[in-house]
Length: 67
Ligand SMILES: [Cu+2]
Image: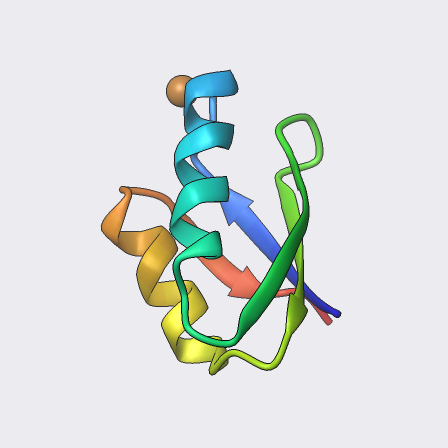
């Protein structure tokens, strides 16, 4: 599982956009959660982390890998 910290999400539309963006990254088997309140997301699979971050950035949010 890869956990991400995401800043900039303000509503369920953002959650949906992030969810769909993550799901399209090669190597992502499943988006486990995108949490608006905590600004977190988790995916299952073996994607390149740089591509996860880029996919979120393309939607207009900032992301980093959560330790
Ligand atoms: Cu929104």
